[in-house]
Image (cartoon, rainbow, N blue to C red; front, side, top):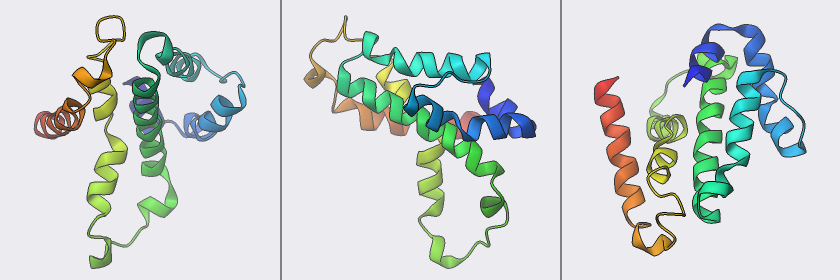
Length: 137
């Protein structure tokens, strides 16, 4: 996704991206084409996926966007690593991957109207997507 490259390298974009969620939830237009395009795709998820699957997809994308902002956050960059944070790596891995979104993309409601046919597969697919991404990155 182009978002992570731009937010990772552009201070002005970080400032705009920090307000993405707020603008999305208040119905405001995003200040640039990239952010507005992401917002549009998030809003259109219900057009293509079961409402609950669309919610899962949307949450996955929003978590990914948040993880990119967290990487640039002073609190994250200056955070001391301690033994108390044993679960932090798993937490951050879950936050930073769009594993559930990618799994959901496989099941458009037109082809899979019965969520019960595939719902149990999503956690395994998400785990496979995470591991594959880690190996290939």
